[in-house]
Image 1 (cartoon, helix red, strand yellow):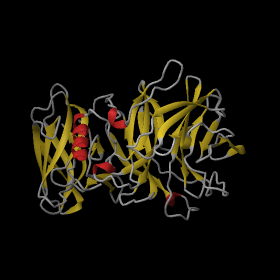
Image 2 (image 1 turned 90 degrees about the vertical axis):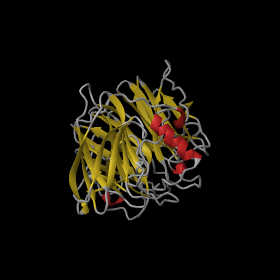
Image 3 (image 1 turned 180 degrees about the horizontal axis):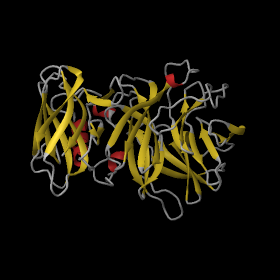
Image 4 (image 1 turned 30 degrees about the horizontal axis):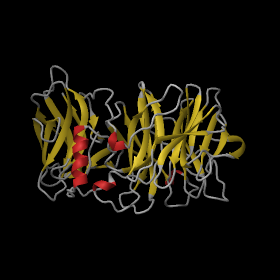
Length: 443
């Protein structure tokens, strides 16, 4: 994901689209992400994902990540909130597959499939973690097969919670109120939804039950079925997104947020900025979704043919973590030794974009950034609306004595009023990693 020197047509088109906001590209670019599991809590979208390693050829998945947003276009990376090491009983060194997190009674439950080892559950007092294993064993493990993947959980209006999962079959159990045990037997659906492959996402809306899923193969689209009961039978209604040769797999996550409905899924569009050789390095995208009066869902075009509107302006007059962005292809987010994240792997001519920043009527006067640098450092040109837009300030990043030694550096800001897309354009000696960034703030 690091080869920004690739300047093929697809790269230029994608970058132009990301800059102009006319197409919806993968919402996370500093890591490969898949299997989106969005959750709305405290007026914020918590997006949990799986993680394809940068060197993955096949599935190489070791941990689960978290991103948050309140405007649907700028996302903050919170790093890994759990991993295979969270389960002492897991001996596998791969297989952290599609999870989902749900809140109940002030606690947060993460249902994690470990490929070939069943489905475990982790619990936390916070949606940010840390998540701990209360069972020290799988919640579900049907050892006679490897169907136990892709759990989805929802709580019905009567308080009954259900967990569904499976490939190629669909199973469900009734979870107890403690959310870490279940009552009765595992039920296998006698009639799985037509075109069902894997990745179920079950929810209830306006009295109707929905099961979205990876549909048809191969390639996969996103299909969905509806029912009058949580236990089925399920009637397939069609596609939310039709299969397309532009992607090989899919995995839906669906939420209502601030008056709109959204469908999340995955694709290989970020990988395709560099190569069309197939590798399991996927990326999450999201699009607005609409319902018909009868509850059926209108088809959504392929991700790149949709446009995602920002639903509130971004406030720059506060500490903003550098790993908050709408676009930052080529950059990397890594963990501080003592917690938190920072942006690294910054090269000359790369940039970071934050969309819809509201500088207000009076405007910004000063900018400061926490940065670390060893050698020559470089410059951040602060521009509005594009990488070629007007420069409102330049801050010089000088050596701090180490890449883990952060210091505040600042500059004056001119002509930054109203709402603009904000671009940090990085300049320095070619071939050198320039500096690391921790956080920034306008005043």
